[in-house]
Image (cartoon, rainbow, N blue to C red; front, side):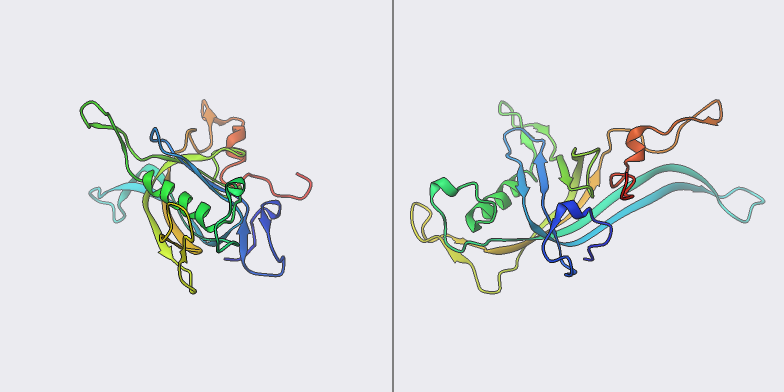
Length: 226
């Protein structure tokens, strides 16, 4: 993915490289009891943001073209990332917050997958909360400045990407387990925006655009002096 149109303050790495390394992706499941995850300094493999304008079509007698009534604009964000670890072996407890350790990254993967399932009422095992998420990724996925968007995933796909094989846990109670040092994730995300999106009028006359629309969808004005 090219580096064009990405906030330079939120990417790292060689400025002459075509590889984009973003600094933060946060995915918080809204189901109770499920931990959120934050990926730091990951590779952004792909990013596509689609805006589908949906209408109802009606054929009227005497008209060659159908009459269309607007229903909604549906946004779908598909993106893929690669998560990699600098450390093949596993650190000691004082280093458990190191962002690029294989075991830490693997735990984030498992927390993410757990969030793809709903929460249930313990008393009768009925569905309590569907698997919704709040997602934030720099200025590319945000409801407002530094605030994630609530929505749902069509799918979350884990792809083992480590050409040199898995790491074996060398010691402790998890000895013998295998953990990928590099893996990829792909997502198809449907935002559920909190604010009404569009322009506004009063008595047929335009009114001031709300501040949140001026920042929609990627933070708004990107001029150097803004």
